[in-house]
Each structure stands twice: as C-alpha cells, then as structure tokens.
Amino acid sequence: MKNSILKYLLIFLLFTGALIAYLSIFGIETDKFNNQIKNRIIQTNKNLDLELKKIKLILDPLNLKIYAKTVGSTLYFSKRPLELEYIKTQISFRSIIKNQVTSSKIDIATRTILLKDLIKFIRATNNKPELFILEKTIKKGHIILDLSFNIDQNGKIKNDYEIKGLIKNLNINFLNRAKIQDINLNFKIKKDNYLLSDIKFKAEETNFISEKIDIKNRKNNFIVDGIIKNDHSTLNLNILKLLNLNFENVNVENAKFKTNNKFSLEIDKKLNIKNIIINSDININQLSYKKPNILNNYLLDINDFILLKNHKLNLKFKNNNLSIEGQGAVQLKKKLDEIKYSISKKDKNLKVNTELFLNNINLKKQDFLNVYFPDINEKINLKSQKLIIKFINNKLLFSGSGKIKIDKSF
Image (cartoon, rainbow, N blue to C red; front, side, top):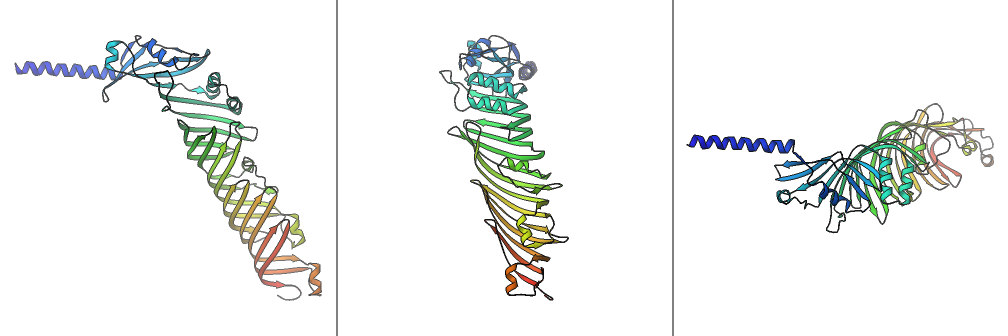
C-alpha cells in the first residue's frame, strides 16, 4: 500500500514538475486577454492603437507569478507605427479564473528601430520645437527600448516609470558646429533623471570613452555632468571649436594627446549649450606654435615655429574664461629647454606667465642700452638663464638671472 502511494506521489510530482517547466519555458497561448491588455495601454491616450497577436502565459515559479506576454505587436499613434518586440504584464491566478486583467504594471520592449523613426513617433504625440531640432540634428542611428510603467486608475502613466535601452552607431551634426559619430551607449531614464553608461563616440576623428554621464532635468533645462577620456589620439583643434575656443597660429601636425576631462554644462530647450565648466588633465607629445611677431623685436635666431614636447598641463574653462597651467620641453632654436607656464584667456584678452630655463639665446639690442653701454653688441648673448617672461595687454616683460654677454665677455 505504501509503495503504491509513493509511486502515485512520485508520478504526481514528476507531472507537476514537468508542467511547471513547460509553462515556464513554453507557456500557453491564448487570446482571451487581448482586448483587456489593449484597452489598458490605449486608455493612456485616445490616439493610441495596438495590434496584438496571441498572448502567451508564462509561469514565473520562483516568484509565483504568471506573465501575459505577446510577441511581434505594433503600436500606433495617429496611424504612425512603432514595431514592438513584446508586451508583458503580470496576471494573478485570480485573474485567470475571472478572465480579467487587474495588474497596472506593463513592460514593453521595442525591436531595433531607427532613432529618427522613434522621434517622428514621439513628435506625433507631442510636437515640441526641440523635437524637430533633434530630428534634424540626427543623421543616422538605431535604438532599442525597454519600458516599464504603472497605470493609475485614471489611465495615466505614473511617475515611477523606467526606460532602459541602448543606442547604436548614432551620428549627429550639432547645429552645424560639430559632427559626433559612431555613438554607442546604454541608458536608463527615470523621471527627470537620465543615466548614460558605457559610452563610446568619435568627435573630429578622435575616439572618446566615458563610464557614465548623468543628466538631470531642471525646469526644462538639462544639467549634464560626466567624465570623458581619450587615449593617445591625434590632436585636432576642431575639437576646441565645440567650446568656442580659437587658438590661432597653432600647428598640430603629428601631435598626439591624452586627456581626462571632468565637465558640466547646461542645455536649454533650443539645444543651446551654456554654463560650460571643464577641468582637464592633458598630456601632449608635441605641439608647435607660430612665433608671435612681437618676439622679433626682442629675440634673435628663433625658429619660425616654437616646438613644445612632452607637456603635461591642466586646463580649466568656466564662464568663458580659459586657464592653462603646464610644463614640459620647448625648442626655440636647435636644443630643447625647459618651460613652465600659466595662460589665461577671456575673449581677446590674453595673459601669459612663463618661466624659461635656457641654455643659450640671443636678444636684440635695444636703443636705450646705448646710454649705459656704448660698445654694446648688436646681439646680447644669454647663457644658463632662468627667464621670467610675461605677456599682458600686448606688452612683453622680461626678468631673469644668468650669464650675459653685452660686449666682449660674459
């Protein structure tokens, strides 16, 4: 007798286990909940429509829940389609008995869709001017979305929604000022908060990466904070144009650079960028700068281009003010010398403080020196010099210490 009971109990357990496995993996198809799920979604907006296929009931045995899931649906707004991968909602055992969906939580996933098509779909629901600008800014790219939201008793989506997804191969032309290409990233969106992660993109042929960027919505303006890095890339001064910076007479041929950039900025409704703050640590292997004409009045035999090599510098930009502090090697003639410098620039006002450690350099004789040194040479030769040079309001000031030759000997 006991053996019979154990036998039937074992058969029952095996049958139950197999049924649970089947329902968890394959589920059961039905169309009895189609209209209820459709009504749940379209009640959020009267212009919505939904084309559903058969719904599959999937068991979640760990959480003792049943999910109704339909694959390959299409969502319409004013007859504009959006292809969906699936729609899923939770159904209780009681709902199955009563043939009534009571859950307010809905999960929707899209297929891979063109980002432009998504924006067109959103514009059909809310045709704000900034969406039109955004559509024109985007040149290509795809997006996948996973949406999770709850619907209240009045058919409105609650503020506890969450949107996750990824963007692939996005190209944008930002107001004809900058081209950013090959953008790939993951994102998570909650009310007034946006998190971008695992970001890779190319700006002006330079590759950049970022672990994350935080975006917050404050009174319809977006506050952006993040860190962006690049590793040994070719320097392109067009990158600086993104910040409205202009370094004239700079030659970046064969220049490589590596950066770690902390930044924050604000984007308004018209996609204008303002309140830019940047703090960058930059390593540059080499950079040449065309000799300012004013140096011809003071220095002789200087190369037409001043070469900077192996420079480490810190760049700060705030309220349209640029400041740079750095040090490295400088080549004014044939040999390399050492240099430390600080630069500040606001609009067209430029101030430069420089400490130069020079092996050998020639100064041009100044007329006022004839009063003190009648026999002074046309070239004043300096050796083993520590020079402090200041450039303020288009005036060049020198001071220093070392050996000087004004006539026959040092």
